[in-house]
Length: 237
Length: 239
Image (cartoon, one colour):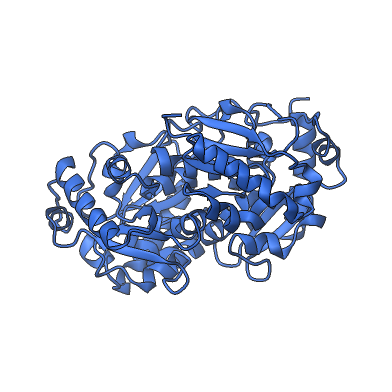
């Protein structure tokens, strides 16, 4: 890898390669390498099992040896590994789109809320926020998940059978719950790395700024390689 | 202006003649989104850099004007406007990112614990806690080291109403400040370029020093990506 390359540590499940997917190399206007972390099943990682940290560290070190210039994971629930994975390599590491919360918070009017849409709100906790430097107690974040939906069921399978329509319906249902309960939501952040498939849909349907794993990967890639020809050019209308 | 049809960045500008070299944020060709530039009455390098509170009202008014015109997000062409971040963000409904100093907390998190973040600025002597707090962080809890190009030819030119600039001058001055900072702090792991002129030389600095580097244009691209449809991806759920 002579060109600066972003290494993406994948959950140990079949990739979802729909257009716009974070698992799809065509989503990125710069070189990316996806690599599975052995044993990183959805239930293990989202359940907060620290046993899997070693596999993430080994995988990150292997990707660095292979020439990756920056590393990200593909599950927001790895945020509590941020310090450990980052300490194990020299290249920049951005485990989770949750890293964007304090940053995005500042771009909004004071008292505006952020809708944080996640794979499973029942598994979301303070430790995930603390791992990337913020707290649910002080940041204006409203968490909603797709737990119990068809998308959630599919994402827990070894080969997820997600469709755009299914995911759009289920993520929008979570978004609507937040928007119906809170008048002053200023932005949406997706924790889940599968949700970028429906970023355009949710942005268009809510009229709100949406930040996701791809937004974060873009900063990482630009930091190590300079600006790419951005994929937002000639936007699909 | 077609701000309503295509998401447009509203950029609040100093009265100083903008620098429009390739890669400059005041050069519309730098971006693949439209930019609406609006000079802010009374805003000059001299009174925006530093801590003079006088000009904040003019920034607020200009931001409101751009929002009425229909821009999708607001930024500026001077990183020292970080001190206006809260007031301008409070005055409009669209997202506001005034300074690349806003990238500092994120960049500080993605480098190995114990390593430092370097900030290279227009004038290190005038960049203070007021600006950091505006951008959402504090020197007390973020291990950043700072160097500026104060005293250099680029610095002198940028303070003039009509700066006379070339790429070589800026490369030399920004690299000199960066190298000096890195020599004194060998544990720096990434760089944030504060000054809005520095994107012109960001690729050069990144290659010369070999460290991850972000700048004002990184911030503005990130901001606009949040409000712009990505190409090739469905807007609607195709049943």
